[in-house]
Amino acid sequence: MCSWTSAAQEGTMRRFTFTAEDLKAIRHERYHHPHPRVQQKMEVLWLKSQGFTHEDSARLADVSRRSVQRYLDEFAVGGLERVRRLPWKGKANELAAYQGSLEDYFIEHPPRSAREAQAAIEDQTGVRRGLTQVRAFLKKLSACAGGRSGPSRPRQTRRSRPTS
Image (tube, rainbow, N blue to C red):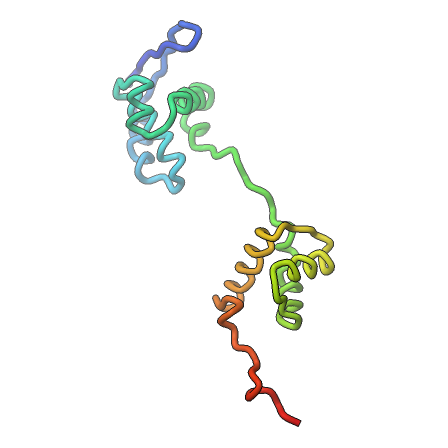
C-alpha cells in the first residue's frame, strides 16, 4: 500500500492511499484503457503515487495543474471507478431518424449546393441546420452510399441520355 500527502489550496494536508490493486490497475490502464483521456488521468495518478509534485505531474502528463487537482479529487471521491468515468455524452443527431428518407430524396433530387440541401432538409423534416452541419450530414450520407462523394458519382451526360 502506497500513500502520499498533498497541500490543498486552503493549506491543509490531504492524504491519499493507493492499494496494491489500485496501483496494478493504474499501471495497466495508463497504457491500455480504450479512451486516451482516461489513460491521461491514470498517468497523473501513477505519477502522484510515485511521489511527484502537482507541478511535475502536470508537466510530465501534459495537463494543467488544475487538471491534476481535478483528477485527484475524482479519485478521492469515488476511487478508480470515478476516474474512469467520462461525464460527457454528446448530443443526439436529430437528422439520424430521417437519414433513409433524406438519402432517397437526394438521390431523386440531387442538391446543387449546400444551401439548396439545407432548404430541402428543412422542408422534408422540419429540422433547421446550419450550412456546416448540412455539409457534414451530406458527407456522411455519401459515405453510407458506398463512399462516393457528390462530384464522383456517375451522372448522365448528353451521350448517355436517351435520345428521342
